[in-house]
Length: 322
Ligand code: PEP
Ligand code: MG
Image (cartoon, rainbow, N blue to C red; front, top):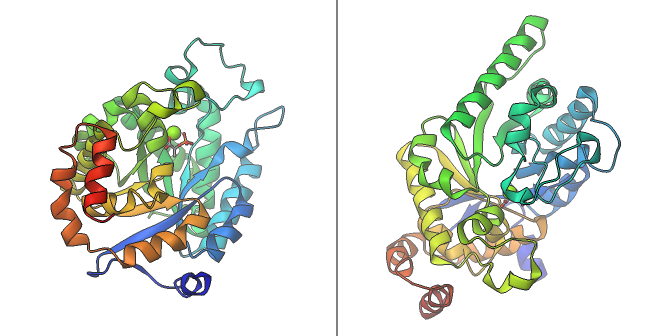
């Protein structure tokens, strides 16, 4: 079994009927690139940059960040690397930022909301990212987008930073894709509009489940209610993929669900283009996809999405042999 998987390390990710997808890895530090490559990842679908900011007493400098981004981009080149800008708040606390104590941190001042208010922090990160862009295939991704205004503001700041670097004579790649995470139901619902502003979507199921079902992802007491099989979550995912494709952009997923063998057939049927998961899940996912017929799965999706409960979704999938 292990040998069979090893043979797939350098293979593309193809379904039985020849439909190609990309299987990427989620990483938290530059060191994780080794695991990603050893497990046959075709790229990095989510580089969480929080490690640069955590467990220290001051902000990371532009130079420190530049070195980290450059290292990942160069190690993975020419493969794509999606680097996500700072996603603090919620469960991720950073003491020196003096973020306010809030009664609902997951609904509060976090991620892009922090970056759009404390723009000095954001600009430093964007400068480091743009400067690192010439060392590989960089895609920049913004977390916790809930509105079109946020996308436009974010892009405006990015362009200002690009212009500033250009004036300084720094070289910046002209091929950087800019995308957003879809992890808030509001963003999923207006994904047709958002798709016209960005180069890609990446669906963050970890938060999308929490915000769609009003189930705190950290609360063990209600963990049984937290499931990607909830038909509401699956319908939103379907909507996002359709809307992305209508605008001609690619749609990935970087939440935990992307690596779940029980869901991969459904997402493949929905047309998901990129699946980003923990490195150890990549080869099993590639093997699974090689046995799946994409066109047949596509036909089953509407029927599965008619389910009323998570249990029913599982039963319908089971009845189809998945
Ligand atoms: C997500 O919300 O699905 C996600 C990938 O981001 P994080 O788990 O870092 O919130
Ligand atoms: Mg998230």
